Amino acid sequence: MIESIGSKAGIGAVTPQDRLVVPITPASPAANAAARPSEAVTRQLELSALAFDFGKAAPVDEKRVEEVKRAVRNGTYPVTPETIADRLLALKLYWSPKK
Image (cartoon, one colour):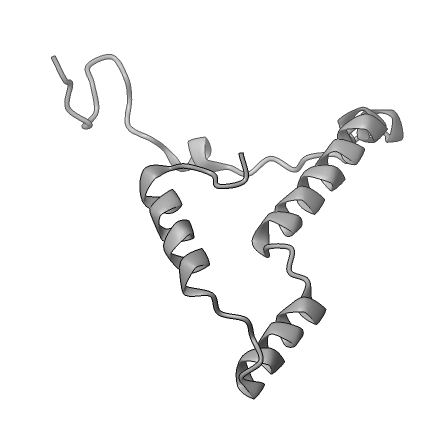
């Protein structure tokens, strides 16, 4: 069963003394060194961040993209209806024509 949030028998109400802030002394340099991550952990975090950045954008050959755009604009991009039909059928059937 769920108990209520109010005060309970045997437990007194919260007093101002219960809310005092206690100053914390700075930790020793040895404790700070122990709290820092190891070099291996730091390296792993760097690699994870790098992998995340690579995953943001697909690798694109911008030079090839410009060549294709230029060819389409000029009307010189080779369009073969048979190839398009073959690729559409392969896509539909999950089949690779190169096999």
